Image (tube, rainbow, N blue to C red; front, side, top):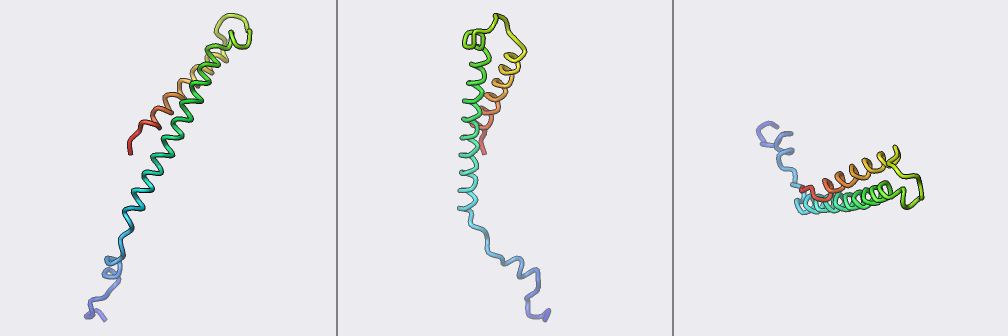
Length: 91
C-alpha cells in the first residue's frame, strides 16, 4: 500500500481550510463585545466617582473625606481606566 501515494500524512495535509470569513467575523464580534464592556465599565466608574466625591453633599454627611469615599474614588478611577483600556484596545 505504500506505493499508492496515500498515507496518513497525505490525508492530513489535504484537509479543507477553515473559512477565514468566520474568523474575521469572530474577531469583529469579540472587539464589539470588548468595546461594550469597556463602555459599561467607564459609565460605572464615572458613577462611582461622582457618588464618592459628592457623598457629603448628596447624603448630608459630615464634612471631610472618609474611608468609604477614598475606596469609592479609587475603585471608580480603576473602573474608568480599565474601561478605557477595553474600549480603545485594538485587535
